Image (cartoon, rainbow, N blue to C red; front, side, top):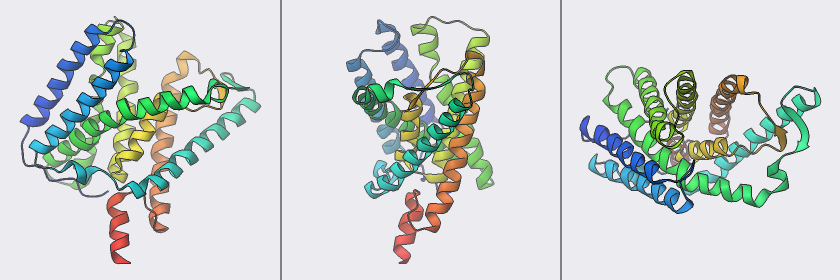
Length: 278
């Protein structure tokens, strides 16, 4: 795990940043007329998140540019992502051939309509995944790590957990105000699933420090590129989610080790250190 950035402020800036995001998100949710905001409102919200994240980092004395991986890391990052989803679909195909319920050999909507899928994936990446990962992983998680004293591994673990919990509760305005859901077992399951997602993304970021990689995983999980028709029974959603996120973490850990050994690390700091020693 590479070094976290050095922050100049204390607890106040992240608290104010998070509360501001929740307040504005609640307002955006209230003026939305459907289950999701309009494209224009969604784009405006994504830009707002980016601006808030950049402003918080600036106040903290951290250069946002220092958190952005070099563009040359996009090639190994895309390779990692494509390989993971190729293996995912290969497993899904094997389950379909075995007659497992919920899996069908029939082609999915992704195959039938690739351009709309790519458009939705691109929109999710630019206006949802990158802004949210900038705020929750690059800033709030890293800030929590910096505020935790003692052992580095303990600090990282606490930072990942804090970022995951904040990420889960960040979705509450939509749950209550847009979807009109209440408090109950469904809410607990919803928060647990979001926390698991936050833990997975947080661990990927802690291991690689690569914003592009974690944002791409986030976007593709929002728009999963299934080549086969998959209908997971509702009672298995949580279990499947646990398996998916655990697979992402394990795959990234193995890939980070292998690519670092090959000199094409997806971790920017290690990649630059390797090049500097050549």
